[in-house]
Structure formats: C-alpha cells, structure tokens
Length: 191
Image (cartoon, rainbow, N blue to C red; front, top):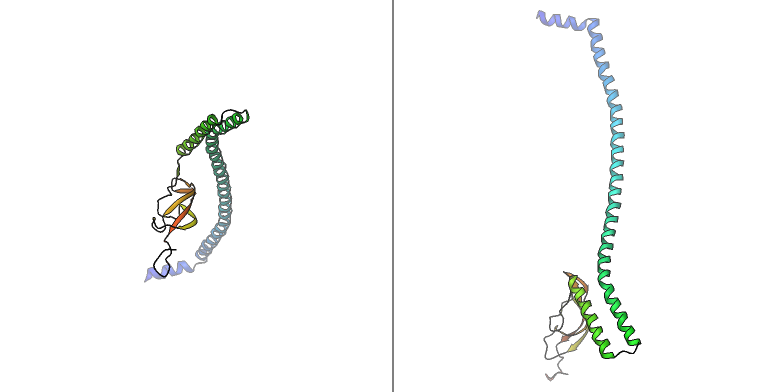
C-alpha cells in the first residue's frame, strides 16, 4: 500500500505534472510535422504520378512510331516485289504500241499473271475455293441464285470473282452464284 501512496504523491508533484504536460506537448509537436510530412508526401506522389504519365505518353508515342515504321518496312518489301510486275506490264503495253505480234505479247502477259500469282503465294495469300463447295457466307458473297437440278441446294455453281484470304483473314470474299432447288408446279413438275 505504501508503494501506491508514494507513486500517487510522485504523480501529484508539480515537476512531474510538468513532465507529463511536456510529453503531451511533444506528442502534439510530433503530430504537426507528420501533417507537414503528409503534405510533402502527397506532393511527392503527385510529382511521381506526373512523371509516370509523361513516361506513358512517351512510350505510347514511341510505340506508334515503331508500328508505323514496321508498316512502312512491310509495305516497302511488298512494293519492291510488285515493281518488276509493273515494269513488265509497261513493256507489254509498249510492245503492243510498237505493233509486235499479239501472240508474243499474250505470252508475256501470261508470264506477268504467273508472277503475280507467285507474289501472292509467297506472301501467304491464298485463293478461296468456290465452285462445287457448299456456300459459306464467311468466305463467299452470293450475287445470284439459279435453279439447278444437278446441284444440291446452296452449292456454289459459278465463281464471278475469285476471293482471297491471308491465313484466316478474308481479304475479299469470292463472288458466286449459288444453286437453289428447282421450284415445282402444283402437278409435281419443275418450272
């Protein structure tokens, strides 16, 4: 019990009360710099956010420039392959203008056509199968329907314009005519 009384007396002394007040004031003083440092931290984070935004914008612009450069390189390679074909067409037209034999010019044009087909194949472009195939709207564009008793309905019976694909990507669908079942008259005969 005496220990408790002594502790109470010690706490009630004016110098000890001053120590407690000073400790509380010190805690309050520490709180003030914390709020100041919190504001400073907010400014630092805002600055870092601004830097991150700038870095992102720079990255985006650099990526766009690199993509454009890549597209140009791919186009340059393709056009480099096309130019000899254009030159050969020019030579064929010039030969016609000079009155050269049409048969020789035709042989030249067929060679140019072969060069063009090889260019397409070398670059992964393939023609789309059409005649005899079942109509597929993802690769065929029906521009007409005809009665055809010798073909199953929805079978492609004529190719008007060839279609092409690059891998799974359809560049141009094949324009086709599709068979339809012959319509019957009321007596069972076809019209």
